[in-house]
Length: 146
Ligand code: BTN
Image 1 (cartoon, helix red, strand yellow):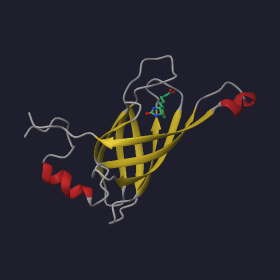
Image 2 (spheres, protein in one colour):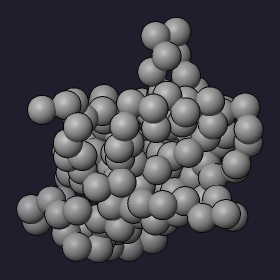
Image 3 (cartoon, helix red, strand yellow):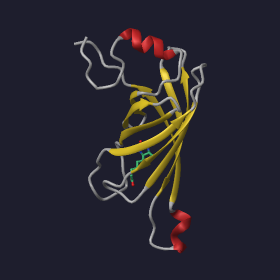
Image 4 (cartoon, helix red, strand yellow):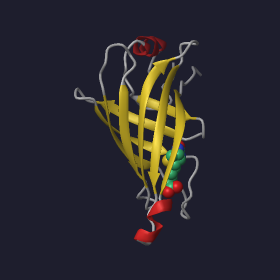
């Protein structure tokens, strides 16, 4: 079996074992086509990763962006988590996501999230229009055998 993307599940057994827990490590894709890679989660539930957004309102070309987060380590597999994405490589904005992991009826892992995206505005008078809110649903990217 070929491991296509780094720390994602190496084997089918790994993926099956992870369904019962709340390990966010790996590659995820959302309903906009954005992808994120969560590197290893430490014993405190803290993690880092890289976010590849599919969309942007910035003028510069999109680049992969660092994310920092923290998750609960519940044994029931339905943990809550949060992370920040700093888009500094191409934008002045900052995003925060909060969410919860579930396993759906077809045994797929899903992350239900909500986000706030803060844009930089020129003055206090423009503060009213600086924050957007939305939701994204992420599913795990599974890499097939070749
Ligand atoms: C910007 O446009 O200033 C930076 C990129 C913002 C991307 C947003 S964050 C919330 C939403 N979900 C995504 O996957 N991408 C967009």
